[in-house]
Image 1 (tube, rainbow over the protein chains, first blue to last red):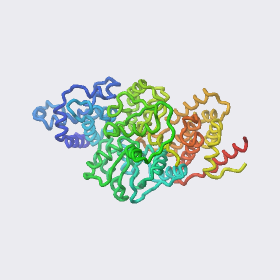
Image 2: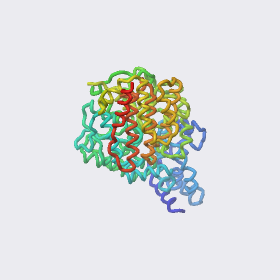
Image 3: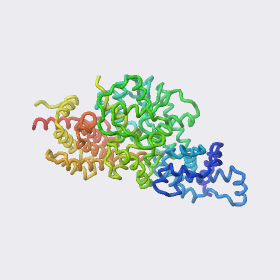
Image 4: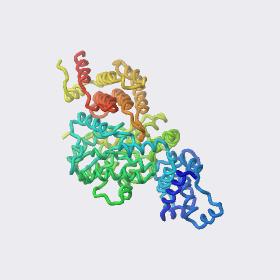
Length: 419
Length: 151
């Protein structure tokens, strides 16, 4: 057995706690998770059912943590985890799962299948069975501070543009600011207008905010690839910066998994309660709305719909806030079927988008989103995740659908009323 | 007519242009930064955008091509960014902004948006070399001043 395989098996063993054991024990093989997963529904491939993706972890649980499994192992009757299994499962665990958590929602016995897949990734990554794209992104996140290699001078260049565009000073490293805004590299590289929008909205709202030069990156590749030690390092950077600047609230930007990573996994990863709040940008904007800090003018005339990013809505609970905000600039809004917590993933979350090997399947499973859109025929789609946004645009292009994509934060900024 | 010398005058002058004039001026900005893109499609798209007599069908087709060029040139989530290549993405976004109808354009209008993307494209092309000082925008003021003076 190779050292990497042994390491992977050891890590898989570490993942089996009472929760995982109870999940595997209680699975009744009903198949409901399959029908909730777009990687199964759009391919019809039984290998891609969510529970099947956990097979390496299940085998470890069975062979090492069940009586029958242990007896079977003594006589060589229990299926083991070997190199071939991990090779075969790599594409299922990483290419065919966006960690969207829809499977978890439908499990009749309450198994958190997405968590089980997340734990399976821990062992896969330790054994060296993770996609090259995600490995590269994770290395850059640790060494450079950004999965896309965005360095501070590049951010400062974008900030300089925003300052010229808006005429507003972007506060950097301001101690005692109320809010510390994180950014995803996608926003810095592809959508710098998000910074522009935040600057204009926060200025109008009259709140103090800042960007930290020591921890501006919101995303967490450690979560996506499944290496908790790295995820912890990345969360700790944000914690250190927030504590150093003594901010009251850290804001996760328009990125799905970044929010889940810092808000829900963050405290557990670093092993302590944060002494600041973590909020998604939509939560903060909705608080501004409630406080009467947002004065809006004009309405979008086209028929809008909203794509709920999985990690923000289903796994984050931010469902009403975007609708409240859209209501400020639209009277022509239509919900997708299966919206909110049961919305279908765009197909590119959970590291799928940074995995070139998954390009074909992520565009294939976009058929599900196409079907949702065909049913309501919107004239524009609003969302709040840069990764969803890019993938939706690619998917629409692939399926010859001419529907513009709008960032909720940016659209709100477009409608800010002059004083 | 006096020359434009700052962003306030620049923005106001762009705002005063008709939709067709905005498109032509925006395309002129893009023409200036076209060498930053390796995508040959953008040359033809810019040519159509510069044509004051371009038909609605030609403009719609050019906008579609500009969108495709934008999707093709973005940096995918999690992949290693190359700012020199990223300059090409912002060139594509600039021409997309130029061709976007005024009613669908973001704040400031098509020409302002194209100007901003053009500036970011220029800066992007310099980031990998470590020279990230804000670029001089005089060339944009000159393009607009010359256009207004030639009207």
